Image (cartoon, rainbow over all chains, first blue to last red):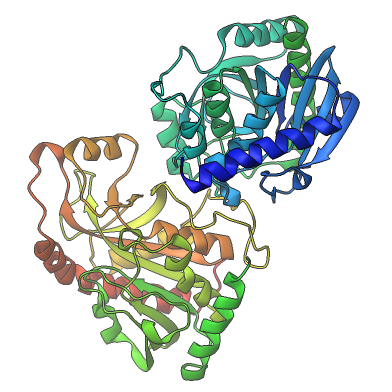
Length: 277
Length: 279
């Protein structure tokens, strides 16, 4: 173990001890409430909120519009631990920084992770406000996962361990969309470093590569969760649709309206999935 | 942590002592393309090593000085020699000169490079006006806490190169009888050249030329609100099914021989864009 991973191990123990003194329940599921699911934090019952800045080992979030709190309580009759706001690579954080809260949530007891994000639609079939249920992802963020690697049992290789995104959770999400009559598709998410949005040439490239949605988050947390043996459901809300062949400036009002509608869809999915845990 | 702003001020203060005029344009001269400084009525030359916070360029045939003066009667600041990711510099440091141009008063950035041609209709020695770009550097100069004084957190990249200036540049090329293309530049980190499989891949994803620079400077120019014109000089053709080993001396020789065309274009762009306001 390098001095850095050793420090992080100690931070993990301190973070656990700190959070456990504040809560009584043992969360079964973890939630990462990115853009699109932020409002869900307010619907957690008997909630205990702890700002990231108070938890040992948590990096500081600098992204606007992200709250930066760990919220523990009951949602849809399940004990949950939720991140209201997340950390991003474009803020300068490492993969280990971004994934650290997942280690904490896992050790608190969560064995399911539901992560949400707002993403750009690359596949031309997508409309603003559609939900994409991640079936696979491409990691173009690069960078090592030293802490994760250091925690892996010595003789275990970084195997694929079956699918990254849990098939039965994804199926449940799709059925929810049928039941409620909104559009949701399985798809592939491409994670870029950001913070620049894509050029038209980059959108064309991504289409050719088979990407459905592109964003700047989620993959580090998901990879960590899988390594730690959690089942993962990840949802993208399509916040804009790339039109590389047509010069359009995004209509912000439209995006906000679609965002609010998509939030309702995402919440319905989370409730349905939790009901079957 | 937000020390970039102060670094820009330090560098500008130093440059203004020797060149008090506000430049209209900043120019970055790529590998083998430094000859343009011969057209500048030089008022000051400043070694990079003397400018606070500037790195020193270590690349082949790069001089490493800032040339300040008038080109086509328009005040400009030109970098003779640029910095590359493969030299080991962080992208924030590589792009510091762009922010300095902006702070000195420039509205326009003209960036040039020597590149490999992927589009089979191009020929060695041709010029391509960059229409769009793909970033495959695996890095971005804007990572870290955003300083809102310098630009937005999430810059839109739907038009990194000003389309009006692309059209204007192509019109100048036609008028001067220069064979200029329009296309997509892809940036890779280097320093090794690409394998045949990688050339096929880059062509498949939609790139017309490939190089190891320019994208970081353009991203930062978009971030801080400079209009950008990008000019690529095709110094060797990278056709995967008829690939010959690249020779750096040959590449620099081609760049040098194509350089007069680049000069003509840059002089024309500065003369036209330097006197008109671009919307």
